[in-house]
Image (cartoon, rainbow, N blue to C red):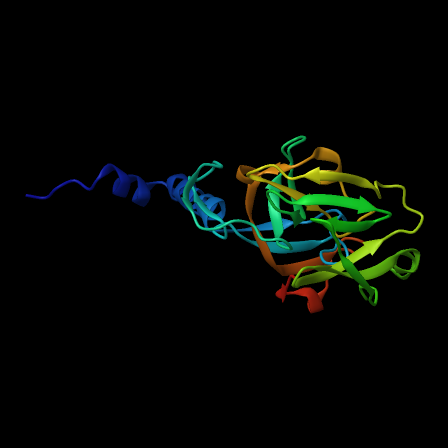
Amino acid sequence: MHKDPSTFRRLWKQSFLFQFAVLALFISSTRSVIADWNYVPTGSMKPTIIEGDAVFVNRMAYDIRLPFTTVSLWHRGDPARGDIVILYSPADGQRLVKRVVGLPGDTLAQRNGILSINGQRLSYLPRDAEPLLPAGEAARHRFLTEYLGEHSHAVMVDPAGRQQRDFGPVVVPAAHYFVMGDHRDNSADSRYFGFVERSLILGRANAVLVSLDPAHTLSPRWSRFFSSLP
C-alpha cells in the first residue's frame, strides 16, 4: 500500500516559496550561530578597517548561542585584550565593530591620548599611513602602533581632534569590557557609552572578506580581499 509523503516533503516538492523560506531560515540560523559577515560603513576602526570593508565574524569564538538570541548555550571562552569584536551598543542596540581594550577587573586611564592599563602606560611607535586612505586624510592624521601587552595594532589620531583624550581611572566591572575604535578621534565607544556587558559581544572579527570603495563607485580593493585582521 502506497503511503502519502509527509507534509514537509509534499510542501517541499510543491512550493517554491516553502523551499525559499526553509533555505532562508537555514542561512539566517547559520549566520546567527556559526559565522557571519559585517559590512562596515564608517571609519571608527581606521586604519585597521576602512569604509567599505566586509569583515568575517566568527560567531562561535566565545559562545554557542541559541539562534537569534544572545542566550549562551555553551561558553567557549572570553574576549581577549586586543580582539576586534562585534557587539550591540549599550546606548542604542546598534551593531558595532570595536577593539577590546579593558578586561573585567582592569583599571584604565587615558591622559593626552595615552592609555594606561593597571598603572602601566602603553607603548606607541610611529608607523606609515594606510596606503588606501585618501592622501588629504592621511596627511591630517598621525599613525601609530599601539602595544597592548603582547598584542600590537595600528591606531590613527587627529592632532586637531576634540574627542575625549582624558578619562579615568575607571575599573571595569565583572562580566564587562571596555572597547575603543582604532580611529581614536572618530569613534563612539566605551569612553561615551560605558562598559559593555559580556552578553552583548556577539563574536570576533577575524578577516576582511571583501572591500569595495564607496568613494569610487564601489570599485574592488583587491589587496584587502581575504586579509587577516590584527
